Image (tube, rainbow, N blue to C red; front, top):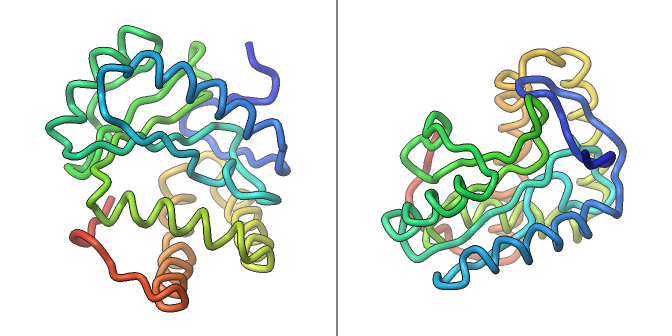
Amino acid sequence: MNKILGLKSGTVKLVKYNPLWKEEFEKEKKVLFHLLKDFEVDIQHIGSTSIIGCVAKPIIDIAIGVKSLDYGKSLIPILTANGYYYDGKADYGIRYFLKKCNNDISTHFVHIEDTNTRIWQNHIIFRDYLNSHPEKTDEYSALKLELERKFKDNRKEYTNRKAPFITNVIDKALKEWNIKKVGKDYKF
């Protein structure tokens, strides 16, 4: 089992930033590109493990960008045949969500998303903005640590309580970088 990745499903345990997360992403990206070699995909490292200096759950979030969700649906059987778990419960009609686990320990989350949608845009913008604004990364880390103390056994509430900060950062980035929103708003 990988010693720098893994967290029991449904729990919140943050660890300090580990530069090896980038290497773990690159390894998995190579595997995914090989598995999906017959498909047109964009594979991006997202989430807190992609943000330099940010505390994070030790799970690598990967966004696989596709031209449409219908197109992306054909990736699911390939991924499930190669170690990813899919039950459809966390799709919310805006993505396909899979995870790689060892027993009840999650190590990788994969989000299959249409690259012309707000969820894809938000993932990329949030990552890029925090990586270019370390003071915001520090602020986000402090918020996450506070929420971890309050909601260590309730990942859903932990995630919900981060949402206003994330939305604020995305709105600030869109304005500062003069980027227009794409697609429709979404809710989890």
